[in-house]
Image 1 (cartoon, rainbow, N blue to C red):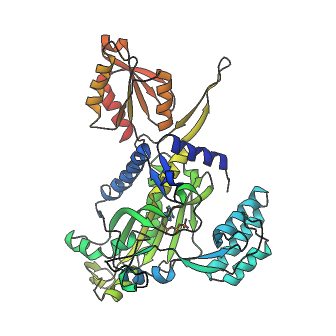
Image 2 (cartoon, rainbow, N blue to C red; image 1 turned 90 degrees about the vertical axis):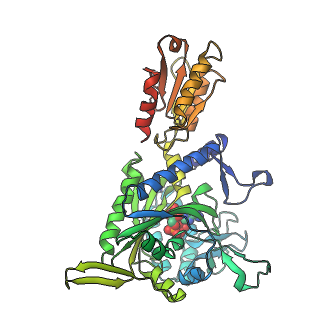
Image 3 (cartoon, rainbow, N blue to C red; image 1 turned 45 degrees about the vertical axis):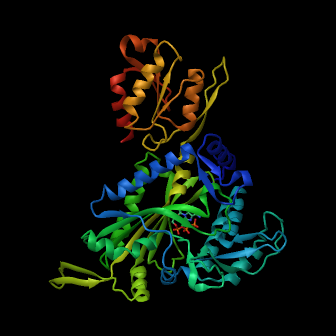
Length: 489
Ligand code: ATP
């Protein structure tokens, strides 16, 4: 539960100063828990999205992608259980009038205990909380808060209301008669992308001639009216999810659940982020649709927190949609069941889901990459901020920097730009000293800079500078494309 709030604040400032992330509607003082991605943030986000998408759809022959609409028939959210169950227990402080998610309030207090060296007390508190949450024991939870004298961080008092459930879905109305009373016109902004996959299960299976086991992947916006929303892009009201539903034969869920846990962890590690930054957390309280569930947690600067969820969802969703829509959600499996010697026949498939927040993944990558380095020598004080992104995710791959604005150097540099820009993102800059330009590129996480100098005119070579080691080497212009391409595939 290491909590490094200075580092977190430094990352937030860096994201703003260098065009990664801006508060939404900033000139109107912002909109709580809503953010805009700037010129470099949108590139980084796109690269993360593409890396996930390609590893799901291109690297697995039996996974295809879809792009379903955000608006869906309102009955879908009845069937999925979101209208009745997508609630969080909340508690209000009567003095500050602030509302808290009960688990966040208790976990925040547990983190304080850990900072004070009272680790075992914190662990016992979290365990009691999880047991009470699992049985929806709100009286017990309130007593736990009172027994530990947990205070509101704003008012400093323990003057709490009773605990109540709040639904997290946003709704709006369809059609011209805008009346909030009219339940018939009510539509929801989807709180997860998964349901778009379930309701298209048969469309994709039939038109794609998919055979079980197979998966459907989707990336898209989701909306939740989060109450505690003060953690930058960790918890937003509008965010993006990358979800994959893997349809399997009933009875094989344990094996596929284990497979996807491992597969997803390997994906994270394939980015070069060390294994100790991740851990699994098995759920004690299972969601209404799950028979097993865990989170992959990442060590953010605010401690280990959920980055991705892996859920064994049984046949809950498809069965519910079959019941509510009165349309069959069955699959005919003509493979032979060895125990009977006959085809498996008709069944509603079981599902393993992997669900990761694109924005949370962005924050994980950014937190891992953000590095402050002291480069001072006895003669001179010096430091730099460098984003050590995996090269394949970096917004800019190659910066092309002519040493001066004259002597034909910009022309040669622009020639390199023309040659490389269709293969990967290049950035051309001729203003300022070369040292300043290198530092700006470090702050954007650009893995390679090339400098075109007077020698280039003689022998067609340039200096290539490596971001992390700051080492420089002389290479031929003809080699550049291959050097960068090798690092980013
Ligand atoms: P949490 O417990 O943090 O609220 P959750 O268990 O409700 O998350 P899921 O419903 O499993 O989350 O959603 C899958 C993924 O979507 C999460 O692992 C997370 O990466 C992302 N996610 C969920 N809610 C948000 C949010 N408000 N802002 C950003 N990302 C989110």
